[in-house]
Image (cartoon, rainbow, N blue to C red; front, side, top):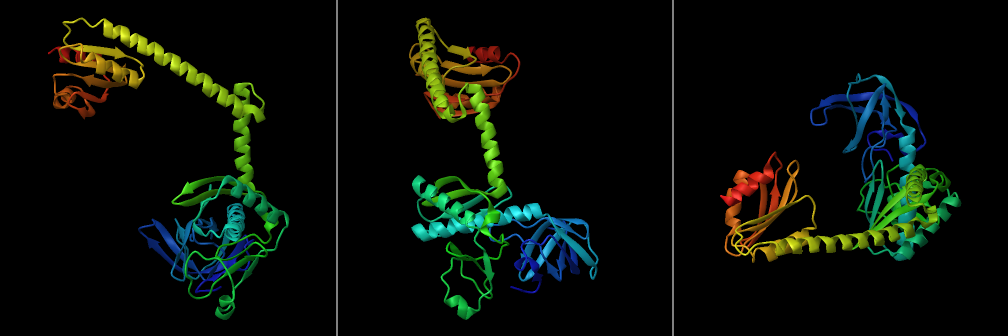
Length: 390
């Protein structure tokens, strides 16, 4: 496919260096870069959910590459002379990673479409992750089936074929496409696996992709969002997870294949301690309630830590035992407090405006009970007590 600029990447995805002539160079204020057009290029422009190639052009780093109509614009921080013959160098590690991911995505999408008749309706190939959105649900068993078969396709080392069919030939093809296409259509075929319209660079054979790992599959807009890692990205993903499992294994004194069970036991133990702590806090607050004298006006309790539900219960019960306001403040003077205030005879919502004028923070609730925060400062607890006494 050639439209205006001769795009070499359609002919040779593995190209690393090329020569081209500068036909246009102009400063673009919006991009804060010089926009450079060449008579031909091997740089893939951002589009179709995939990031642009990076590299050097005339010894200057290429910041971005975009299509404008039938033009391919390279964005550089320094200008190049119009008419000059310049050398382009792709960062091939970045290019090859993108090819691995994109070819892997075609295999996954093709097999999902073949087995379950779902379409890939969304695709993003970033520099870290690849996501695909399918318009139907995928169960864990379905995902495992697809993952196994895509790696079978990798092991088969199938040649990936790129063609530019005529309109007559295109009419006879059964191929995938996310949108209606006009003009010349480029078809990427993985025999026995997938036929798809695509303008991006791909590996020559499926064996170059390496491992294809479906990292995640979640429900998304009535369908499924699949996260993918291929080749060296899959290796990196495995290394990170292996390192994490090894560290967890050491911390829990459990074998790597037993860490999940060890974590569950730790969760159970943690929950038991939380329940015990809740009972102790409840008993402590019950004693505090019993200590409230009958003639009490305001009752204010300051605690560094307390379960919020237990604190709320204390205020709810305490506002019925005092003539004024019952409140609990959780935190410390340096970092501030989270408060709950209750009263059976005062409109606390109306009180908050004056309260936060004296003590910066925010809060809200109902007339009989409010909650909020107060910013920290020196002698804060004593100032709050004095304010309520007044």
